[in-house]
Amino acid sequence: MAWRAVTRFSPTTYGHELYIMNEHHDGGRDFVSHIELTRIQPGGLAPESSIPPEDVEQFLQAMLNAAWKIGLTPTGFEDHKSELTAVRYHLEDMRKLAKVT
Image (cartoon, rainbow, N blue to C red; front, side, top):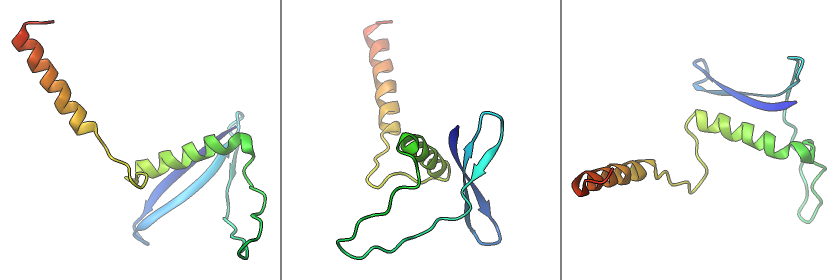
């Protein structure tokens, strides 16, 4: 099985719809139909997770991929892609000047 999260922009609500599913090898899918919140009093114990421990990383990766696709990034994330591109061009120019291939 493989966890997958898909977002779709809804023009009627001007927001994103989220579909979370677990895809089976035979093509079948189990959809998360609702998310249940359970209130815990201060000092209380959290309920057991509904996601099996062996699926947590795959589930979170699916959620991260869906968030990234609509432009969300982790809090504090710094994208250095443009800086790295500038460094590459600079190194390329230096190689040309130094006549190094």
